[in-house]
Length: 194
Figure 1: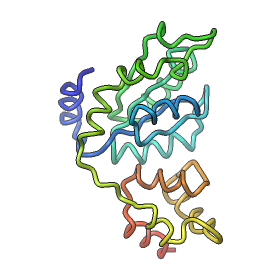
Figure 2: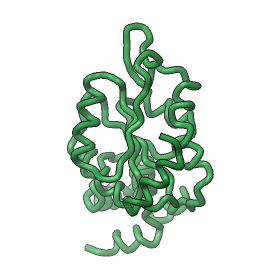
Figure 3: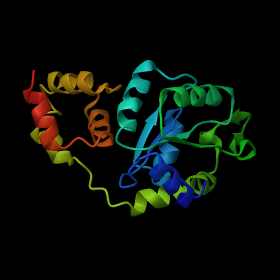
């Protein structure tokens, strides 16, 4: 799908094109490969299956930004796609050429050459690089709010529960809050409310 088609489809569905995409892949190596191509916001399903916590978070994130599925061209990838297609609205699906995704008897995005992944995601990456979205948080904001370092776990846990964040580490929680477009002021208010 060319970017102009994506823009038209998103406008018809009421989705703002002023935010970067959120990419969903299957595993750690897939996530690494997508980030190397320029994808900023990436969530991994954890392999063949997708945890319910991930789906809950993606539903929240889908209210803020368009989700792009970049899954392996195999049975488990199709099952995850089917589940997410039923659970989310306004999402886009990128299908990799299976011939380019096979290496050493394995099938997947991780097996693709980086240049092929870049070509596959070119219209999406171009959008992400040109969109004028200011990131909602800076690293020092997270520190100022007491969400990293000693004694920060309780505060992070409050945000994890509030926003259905499927991760515990401070870096992953920070990334998820940015995916949700939460600002320092939003988070400060959330932490102060019981």
